[in-house]
Length: 237
Image (cartoon, rainbow, N blue to C red; front, side):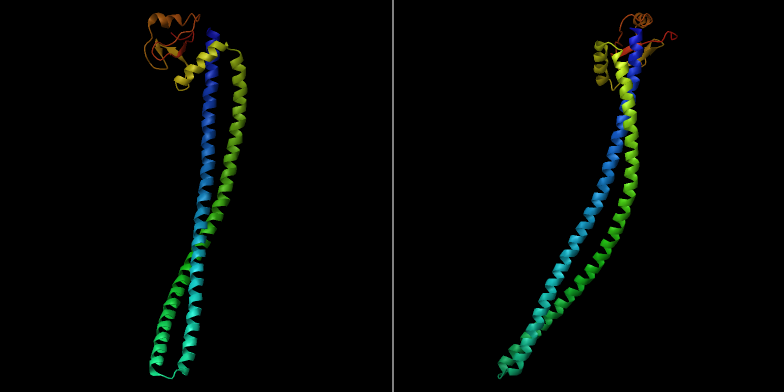
């Protein structure tokens, strides 16, 4: 049993190493996802600004079309004004021209405002596109570094898995099953040393008779407090 316990301890060290590497691997995957999220967020922001600019340009074109219409209306009214015979008709046409010119002025002001907004937005988009390009270049470098880290961890995990397979084969299946069940319940720690009469897993004192029985190494002994497997080294009293 003693040999099996020490091999279980070796297996646990491998499992803890694998757990750590898998955690590191997940952290790198999360980092990769975060890099993608940052780039995508920047792209979405640029696309939103482009859509905003397109809408502004569409509104500006609509105003310009209305302005052309009002110019045509003014021109036709001025032609009619020359042909009018009565004072009443003349005043009505003058009123139309005055209203049309007022509307034309309002349209011209709105067009100027839209043009200013478009210029400002276009400058903002250009700046954002420059930032996005820089971000993509920087992210490409960082993602390459993360990918290198993932490949390194995968190589290490493969080596650890091979070592674990070799160690597992040398331990009775029933003991492996019990070990795995304990690992799930005890945050990955299934087997611990007993030192100075105490369990190093939960730091509780062990009954003297139980502690002394560990030195014989004949049977599997569990801590009565945390239920972890116990092992003791011969040079420890």
